[in-house]
Image (cartoon, rainbow over all chains, first blue to last red; front, side, top):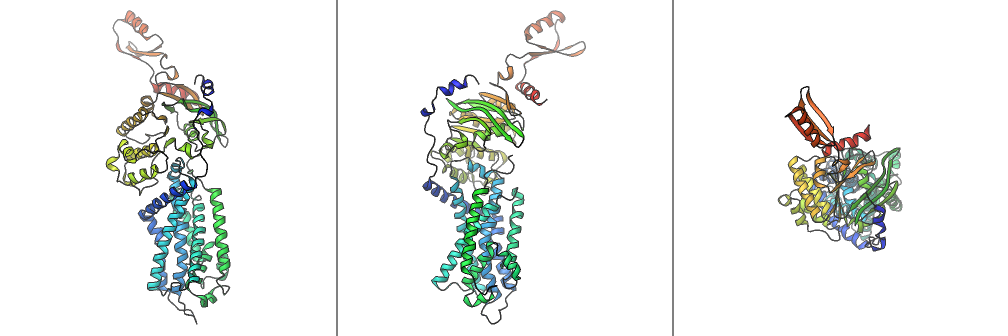
Length: 290
Length: 279
């Protein structure tokens, strides 16, 4: 500890190498984001628990529910199986984004993975690009499987016009984006890796029942369905029904319409709100450090 | 050249003061040990230097940059060895090491780093299947993959068996020989004694002693203890002139049994230093 002051005085800061680079490095962030996308996707499919719990839940529920409840609605060419096949696409999207990230990031944070990354020169945005990218890849695979099963066994018809494909695409993208943001934000709620599954799964399952996914929207009491309208899942399922059940089945909706404008508005609002929540609450630090 | 310069560092958690005015200077190429009991503030100090935690007061420069305002280019020059890799259980040693290499501007060769930490034969193994010692080696591999100028090791050998600790020490000494500046925290005294060029003892948020392992706390000039077995059993004499004491003993009693002359071990000095603070 001797003569520290003279030590630094002898070294004017201008003689040091320039330590700062531009804060924003979009090309590098994007390149590393893609590197992380590949890595995250690989990790997802290697984790058997996640595949069972996150990836298969919509598939399993579809096979069970659409096989048990097969009645045809009075005067319509629509079966309960078809309603399930459409609604459970919402479940699938929410599972691979909200539930997946809510649990996975909480575990990663608890086990020190996040702070290890935070100590590297990896741009933080690359981490989020990796999460969003891998969720997108997993979601596309999930939807392809659900549609395949729906078409093969439960009389689901793929969209036949460019217009409905367009609706399908924006409902999918907006819904996935909103649920992804909410999943990242929700990952800050569990206090440990052990509690993560329980903490994230409870709201997930409750929403499935009240939003018209696990129970057809026609059987959920109107007041409950309206209450679930605060959350994005109800609108995601509704948007998917508009794509797969066709215009004549709109009479089954509470308002007699699919309200696509409102679907877009609510999902976009949740996406922006979720993003703001992420920016405000995301922690690289685990809960053990004081 | 100075690698780390700290003046009057302060950190509070609520009403508790964890770090209460610490000064530190670590030179380039040095292995510096920070020693102290749990809760003394050493992890907090290191985390502030790593840029992982904000400080409440004082000046900090690490490689000429304030870690509180550092950018990614600064992170390129430091390496942090965290405790326990359990966060990517499904990736193999080679996969995770190659992945981390991509985050740095001038990484070391992943295969070479894996070899250096002695994991070559386990390179294809998933993290999940590694033993505790192997995971610590992987932690080191991920800490040095960016070829850092300064490496932080926070209690690197906690939970390792003696054999693994010895191998680990060799690894660290190898890195030091390559010129890496190393800041090491530990509560194993023998470890710090073997590895560190200089060390500081921290207790209750302040540095209570600083020096080389041989001189810490006045160890080099401290009183020696002369012990022998006399008529009334074990006798103990603390003296600054042990040779004279032994000569006097011989003059008085002739040959005596059970004679030992001992200097305080680093542990004695350490216990005294932190004991005085903890009273």
